[in-house]
Amino acid sequence: MLTGEEIIEIEKAIHVVPHRQAACIEALKIVQTKRRWISDDSLKDIATFLEMSPAELDSVATFYNLIFRKPVGRHVILVCDSITCWVMGYEKLHEYLQAKLGIRHGETTQDDRFTMLPNPCLGTCDCAPALMIDHDLYRNVTPEQLDEILERYA
Amino acid sequence: MLEKPLTSHIRADGVPLTLREYELQGGYQSVRKALLNMTPQAVQAEVKTSNLRGRGGAGFNTGLKWSFVPLDAPKPKYLIANADEMEPGTFKDRLLLESAPHQLIEGMIVSAYALQADTGFVFLRWAYHTAAKAINIAIAQAYQAGYLGQNILGTGFNLEMHLHTGAGRYMCGEETALLNSLEGKRATPRAKPPFPQVSGLFGRPTIVNNVETLCCIPHIITHGAEWFQKLSLTADAGTKIYGVSGKVRKPGLWELPMGTTLRELIEEHAGGMQDGLSFRGALPGGASTDFLVRDHLDVRMDYPSVAAAGSRLGTGTVIVLDDKTSVVGFVRNLIHFFAQESCGFCTPCREGLPWIEKILQAMQSGDGRKEDIPMLELHTRLLGPGNTFCALAPGAMEPLQSALKYFREDFEAYIREHASLEHITV
Image (cartoon, rainbow over all chains, first blue to last red; front, side):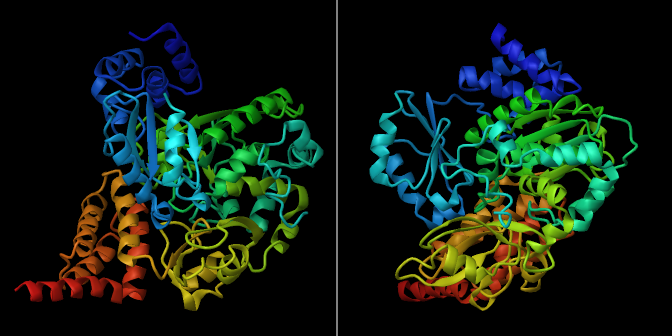
């Protein structure tokens, strides 16, 4: 079931486009913001609300990198793995996170605190390597800073 | 300060100006000038005369692109700012979006007037959260000041503007894939014709322009096409926001006259290479451009000069390759990106890119074979222009084909080392 709040926000998104289905990516993002990920039930509810078939909506949901069709932790770490961050040594950050959190890309820590994912170029190449945790961008990151950065996320 | 029109009003701390502050610095003058004193045709003519070329990578003449929109077509008509900056190594639009949102809105109002479009969308990539906030505030302020909405400045011109944030996919930067994404579909490219100018978003006439392109518009209208042309050192008009990243002393972004040389960017503005490293090559404008090498340092960074040197200006944000970084690893990283971001819609791209990645991976892990280099070369042709639905795969082939041309010995060394190792184990 979509909540009243979700319905209000989705209706707002529908308002700026000529037909309901056109708001489906926005609707997926709205529901994901509240629930962290899109479960099969959420997918069906959104599809019904937008008058599309669940399969049609799933074809869209699975296309986009940042719509999560599997559960994620309370915080999502996006590690930039594109060219400049690679040149500037992002792999050290990745290895450090892997060891520290005991997870590989696509996995979630047992306490449900972090999910780690690779992400294409974050567009801050003059401050590489970079990563994002939730909506926060970190630039010129060194492995030494990571402990302190991770502390900020409960 | 007129020589840096796009960035001179940006505060040192990057915090965007309020609408009032922006107006005090001359902001929104072009809206008054265009809507009150010029016809849409006159605005289009001025932009065409200015010789402004699209800053998103393709470099198409903006005025010419606009001219294919039928002015008398019934509404709705759409103008879209392509702010889905996701080309690896590119970070120029972020600055304009985060720190100068009103300049973009102003450019969009004037452009929408020239095209007689009644709805504008800013298509922003998901990861640019700071930019999203800045643009939302700027749009709200522009509505409040009467620059957006109904009957703007009492002229009868109406324009609604919305921010759309993406859900993360490089393909959304491709003009027609962006339209599909805005329609709530998978971001796969569309067949052309029909071109978006005639049948674009929701089947209506649509123009998609890059952020930096749209930010040039207010200045062209306020100061004139001739002034804009004089900003440049070469035939391509205006300034350009150039960037350099990689192992240089001071990576960064600078607004400079169009036609500044690659040498000046790297040696002067980026402070040269880091200690102990030397310059080996560079991608001049993002991941999908051909390498330039030491012999090209004096090439002027404008569209025809970079093309004459065998590459493309692209986004104008340079990625530097130093002599201690593996060329094969560098190219493999790029190909990995393209293989992952391929929409899977057409076969050469979907199948070819992972194949190339596997070959490069094999080379790196010591399993390279002599046949690999001809196989890579075959791919650069089969995934090249004319064989795929959009420019993603041909773009991916540009760094590969030029790496094979300039750094062939690096690929051969990986294969040779393997051969010698094998010889020892036998």
